[in-house]
Image (cartoon, rainbow, N blue to C red; front, top):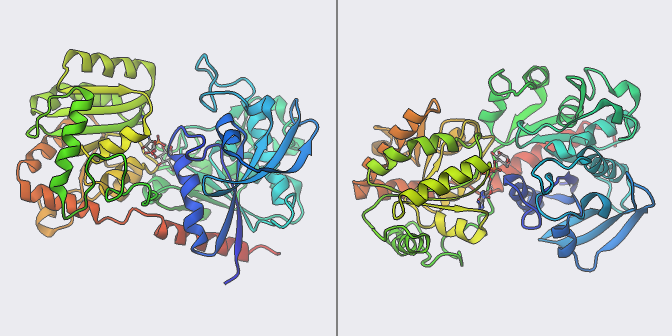
Amino acid sequence: MKRLRVLSVASEVYPLVKTGGLADVVAALPAALAREGVETRTLVPGYPGVIDALHGAEAIHTHAHLHGGPARLLAAHAAGLDLLVLDAPHLYARPGNPYLGPDGAPWADNALRFAALAQCAASIARGAVPGFAPDVVQAHDWQAGLVPALLHYAGGPRPGTVMTVHNLAFQGQFPPELLATIGLPPHAYGIDGVEYYGTIGYLKAGLALADRITTVSPTYAAEILTPEGGMGLDGLLRHRADVLTGILNGIDDALWNPETDVHLVQRFDASHLARRAANKAALQARLGLDVAPSAFLFGVVSRLTLQKGMDLLLEALPTLIRHGAQLALLGAGDKPLEDAFAAAAARIPGRLAAVIGYGESLAHLMQGSVDALLVPSRFEPCGLTQLCALRYGAVPVVARVGGLADTVIDADESAPAAGTGTGIQFAPVSRGNLELAIGRAVALWRDVGTWRALQARAMATDVGWTRPARHYAALFRALAAHRPA
Ligand code: ADP
Ligand code: GLC
């Protein structure tokens, strides 16, 4: 089989820079693709966390002026990936969140920061890196959305382009006056091009002009074709439905493995579920919860936003407490939600604990400890935390939307008997239905045999990257085959 070459373009890559699941996907997919004969090089901006991780980087190109300062393209092996890094200190050498300044507002020059990334990607796609002629360019989310547009308008031979949507809620819209500055011709500014409600839409550009569109679950692929789920882009997406595919995410099942996880107090597998008790006790103690094996422990590992339904969970807390349960929450995001969870935890110590912040190690301990992981999202393109939960026997209690619907099988009245359930789903997403789902989880848990069987089925779910990578590889090959060399 011919080796295929893919240039993956993204603004996040775990563990170097991460605000969400995008980083995990960008980091984990290449190794799985390599097993399918697909070689990936990953282009990311030179944020401080990326530059610090590079050792022995080679400078392939230099630009005297790239949107206001000098830039270099560096090649290095880091984080297990073949990285290409756009080192442009005037654009990326800023600590903290990659998109937001210290005041919490988007950086004023984001249009240029991500145009630079896309322009660099387009030059690599056209052969700027010696010995690396990509067959396919995969652009992740709006930060890379201009790549298909730049290649389209440049004309001439080019690789196939794939726009991968991780979250339609973030679209990257900028003033039309920037058109020439970001390397686009005047005729690009039209309804069939990059124009989007009077702005330049970076994600819109990618969706309009990529050869293929993928998103991260089949159900989300269907949801975004509707006005309710399309966030203003459903018309365009319906128009392009023939090139849209939903491919489920996986997780790195070596990184997320309860048999080897160094963050756990006690490691375990599906045949030794009783060992989780030591983790639960340790977590309860660490978070100041009552160390009570007999209290059902719910967990949350999440951005604290409306997407994630965290406001509904706040409202459901009295019900959760009434069921005698506890909640351990690890999350960061919208300030009002952070404050509300912190205040709730302060009111009911021993039963509610909220760790506001980001904690990789604690996330692992939580997955290996909690009885159930709550994911009450209003929409969820795929979701990775429920996949980790399945793998760790933390029964996922999820809203039936997007990738949550595709990855968790509801243990309804018939499913445990039929031996199929892996978690609990509820729909439509409302406070009342979340409360009912919480109640169902606690009731199922009271029957130890039923619960253990549910956990074991959850842990037997295939959540790795092998299957999704096959799907991507087939899509990339089909695309490359239909393009003249
Ligand atoms: P999203 O990308 O929408 O935030 P995902 O479920 O796809 O949601 O991915 C979230 C990723 O970020 C997962 O790897 C999850 O473990 C991690 N994560 C989210 N919040 C935190 C946190 N507060 N601390 C540690 N890890 C977190
Ligand atoms: C986005 C989505 C999430 C998805 C992740 C990785 O952040 O919100 O559902 O799992 O991207 O694709």
